[in-house]
Length: 123
Image 1: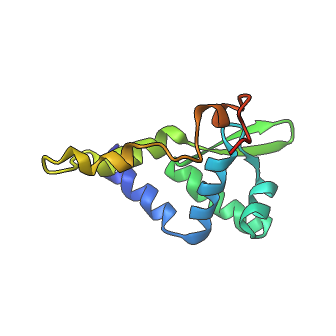
Image 2: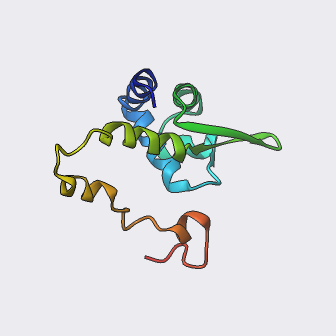
């Protein structure tokens, strides 16, 4: 990831509503959410969420796909991963143990939950 791309992503995430939107879309998984559902999830009006979704899409942090008459938004996991790697690429000053916590997957996330496998929804 280039520094210019990272700056765009961080600028998009530096606004509270947009950060909430990205977090909601990360939880939603690959299927994403319709714009109205995103608005409800973060507690803003549909016109307000539209503005924020446009900014996040422009930064590359979210993707959209049309399904019939609806537009669904989803987190761009690849771009979010690139952003984390950008932050950590020169890490540790010879102390790799510093990076270990960042490299561990969140307990809330598992392959089966993200893919909708049989363990989806189990704690």
